[in-house]
Amino acid sequence: MDLLNKRICVTGGAGFLGSFIVEELQRRGCRDIFVPRRRDYDLTTESGVRRMFDDARPEVLFHAAALVGGIGANRENPGRFFYENMVMGVNVIEYARRSEVEKTVVVGTTCAYPKYTPVPFREEALWDGYPEETNAPYGIAKRALLVQCQAYRQQYGMNAIYLIPVNLYGPRDNFDPRTSHVIPALIRKCAEAARAGAAEIVCWGDGSATREFLYVADAAEAVVAAASRYDDGAPVNIGSGQEISVRDLVAVIARLCGFQGNVAWDSFKPNGQPRRCLDTTRAESCFGFRARTALLNGLKSTIEWYAQQPCSAARP
Image (tube, rainbow, N blue to C red):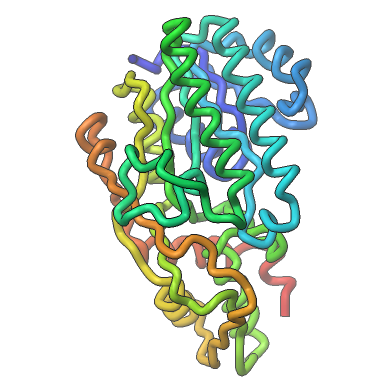
């Protein structure tokens, strides 16, 4: 599909991943891009979704809007994480069908994978068990959207694709310690400790869990490439294919932030999923995506961006 002259709508286009998708589309020459804001279009309501489609009249839709957060936020708000992600996705996909959108791209999550998925995660393993308990409501809600896309493709011939990005990080991420994911949470913790001359930081779990991370600009490139070149109903992993333990990740971030103190581990806090690393061969074979940003370089860019923010400078 040639996206250049299409009317495009990006839900969540003012958010973390969504804003990079918009920039990637613009980099490719797309100009007719509609970005709904929640104050104008509440996508958790059917009326908000309907009004968005009436105003945007999209030919191509990227559904990147989501309620997201780290382990703590998921544990505190399981009902909200399930409901808002489910109702947003169901209504957006349904109205994309009714509006005869030419191409719908739905962004899923690795939290949908079973807790003990063999590493590397292959897309075929998505239904082999229940997700890790701390983020299962979120993961199940997002997994259900894959079923909707596949069912609509089967019954209505809807061209909907479903992508599964791994843990994203980068500039513009959420650094609020109450709701952030692991990398921004650690960057803030280490940067504040370094400025304060603290002797110790405390991290959740025991550091043994492993994760794979993808720089957000690379993720946006993958999403747009899939929109252009992928038209199948099978889900596709989007990742870097590189696994790192949380313990090693903390060590790298502490060094980059200049924190030289001790790292203590609160083993009463959950680790989350034991391991997470994707098989990314389908993305490479189907639409030529391979991550370009090494973790170390991506972390440096993210830390530099965070250091320039007013909220960062205001901290001790």
